[in-house]
Amino acid sequence: MNTPLEDKIRELKHQGLKATVARRAVLEVLIEGPSHQSADDIATKISQRYPEIHLSTIYRTLDTLENIGSIDHVHLGHGRAVYHLGDDPHQHLVCDRCGSVIEVPNEIFASLSKTLANDYGFHLRRSHFAVLGRCQACEATDGSTAQPR
Amino acid sequence: MNTPLEDKIRELKHQGLKATVARRAVLEVLIEGPSHQSADDIATKISQRYPEIHLSTIYRTLDTLENIGSIDHVHLGHGRAVYHLGDDPHQHLVCDRCGSVIEVPNEIFASLSKTLANDYGFHLRRSHFAVLGRCQACEATDGSTAQPR
DNA sequence: TTCCTTGCAAAACCTTTGCACTCCA
DNA sequence: TGGAGTGCAAAGGTTTTGCAAGGAA
Image (cartoon, rainbow over all chains, first blue to last red; front, side, top):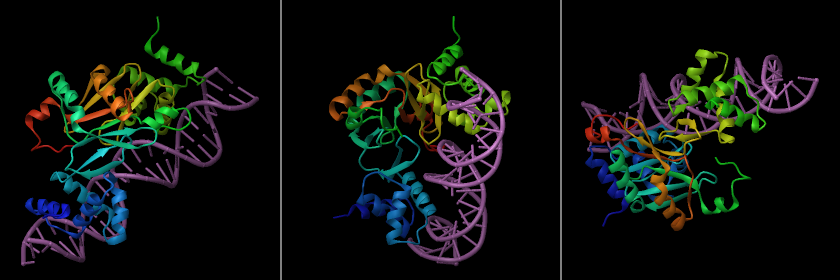
């Protein structure tokens, strides 16, 4: 019986990395959710429990965890990166008006993926791919009042 | 007989905007290509011909042109925005290893677009959508030597 | 003890903004 | 001429980096 955190720590050690407080903290926050959090979101939560952990450490930790495949990041449309656990491959639909994110299973992209590989030799990278558009609500109220941001 | 630049200038005026040196310069650079250039790329080229045009003006100009639909921008994976003319709707395949960009026609996404609309009420926004993955060359040499950036 | 990690501070990077001056229509 | 557009300088937000101190194995 393993908790998700224990599993992640094991992955860490298995890669020859040390299980430090900062790394545990980052993993904790990501496991607790929400599923997509920016470095700053994560830092804010961590600082409540471990005020000594610095933002730059969080960036370095996220980088480290990403390198071993434990987590992944996506750019949801306007630069700021958000991170999520690497376990559940999915894609992101991002509303360019309200910023909401819909997760959709990879399978929806299977046929597109095949087409791109065949026609362009291009290989979709799983879980790292943001699709911009309009969510239902914003599409309904249309784009005349608010700013797409 | 109209040059592309004249057409764009006409669009500008038709929107009640003034055809200034800066706006002409930005349009010139975008028309000359390459098709995807960052604000900084554009500024570098412009500064050779019009050294007095400031980077901030270029940002403002790009914003203006985008608001009237003359141009479009995409975030190609790591924050930096690139701009292109709005005439030819296409999508972008970006290699997350070497950064190369492949343009593919919108039609390739037609069935995906339909699925997303039906199943999630999500409406793909044309021309504003970057797909990350690996280009043929990078996929072939695999990811052990270079950094995905 | 070793050297991987971290805290801190500073810089780097890209983009935006306020303000007064300029210039297009 | 009048108001849109611009140059300049400064700030803003996010992310990276150098270095010396700290801590896990």
